[in-house]
Length: 384
Image (cartoon, rainbow, N blue to C red; front, side, top):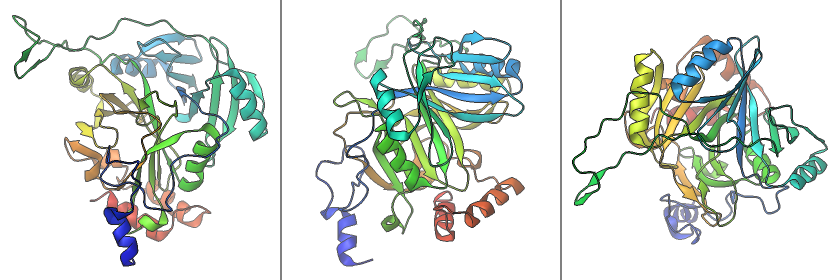
């Protein structure tokens, strides 16, 4: 690396708009800007996630234990919701095997669907979900089905788990009263974000920026490979001056394709902890937690459902408006949390298995962005 390049990375040529708001480093001149100059549309949020599973009764039992409410149930479909007003946050359809189908994003206006359909050579159709509405069906560069929806039924709000009243230093809001959070499921408020793995990270990143108008909050890069570009991005929706979740979608380069985990907001740390004890008592597997993230700052706790999908309880995440520039940081397992237990091999997805070896070999032989140097860099990051 040249001295000029090293000086730039050291901070002498960082974008001043970054202002160290959320990361020690900003972009170096010429690096990915983290947003599109002229996106087709700007989605405003995730609407819901779609899955298939063979046993809806088992899926419903876990859903209730994890803290979802049941929005609708038929012989073939299970719709899950949070307590906030809005659409359901997950649909599980009966299928032969357990698999993730894809996400649905919410468009701001009905005309956005027409513009999106025209730009992508698709069509606007009636949505095949309870409550109706319209939808455009797309495929991202990884081959994942992505829907963009508008309209449809808005579910009314449900009773909340109230945050505990806390005493801080000389601020004593709670007097003559004890803290006894009940041992019960964390009450899900809403769907927060989705994390995906892809072998075509750069293409997928640009697609979500150019097509759906998302913008990057933080980039991660591999040690010694920053000049090759990032290998993970945390993307938020662009709602102008309105501050929104640090990430609604996160993606990282890897040998696999598709779902990594999804995250659901709950009230506070006590909701996360008491709900975690409830899940543990019922024999579910904690993947990683409890801790606090760096990128996004969320309090987190990760669990596996009976079909081995990873789901996260989170609270107290960062909110960014459109004027916050992307942060840049090296990718590492130890850099995933400010405090908490070390990231587990299960969470990192590095448990060895014949299926994992086959996945890596297929990726290295394919037409994608994962080459031996990238793979070795990822392995080093997940062990650092």
